[in-house]
Image 1 (tube, rainbow, N blue to C red):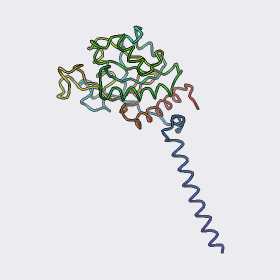
Image 2: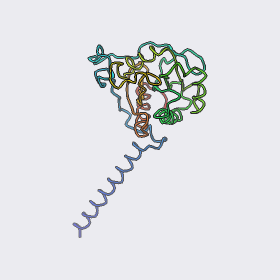
Image 3: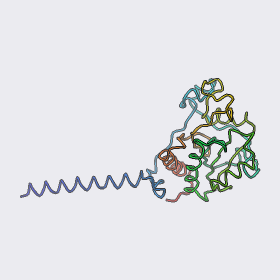
Image 4: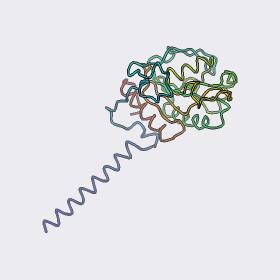
Length: 242
């Protein structure tokens, strides 16, 4: 009799553990936006340097850089006509990407995902989104304002940036490490933008370091990025929805 009781107690304990594990996984890894911030508080994101990235995306003189990489100073203009520089992002976390307004492929998908990100951090004045055009000859301030309106951008939090093609390309290649060299056979010479646009989202911390790279067309990877943003907010002791 005691043996049977012990058997059933063991079964109940195993079943309870399985249910508990299921609840844990749902709580920590659900794509429900209300649970995206739920993860171990001591999780710390890796700092990404040029050595960690595909060589095709990094200038040859930077490929051996294993530490100390930061985003270089920049100056672009946003959809409101305001000049945005690195000082505009002091003590802030931000996500950046590269797109163009007439893109009918991946760009609308990326912008839809960034709408999710904006919604998750709505009203957070220490978080920004920077979307750089890769076709500045067409994407004027006025054009980008209309594009921002199309995707319901908060003009204080989500900036659509333009500038010289050279400066935009240098930022993409030497700071954010997301596009190949013009010598790469995949570079689109003579294309609409003469510039590789990329699906990558890049997460930048308040010290101007790269802390994550994600496929901006993937809902799953963007959910992971949102979790990582919460991790960064904890690391820098910023307020969260916890």
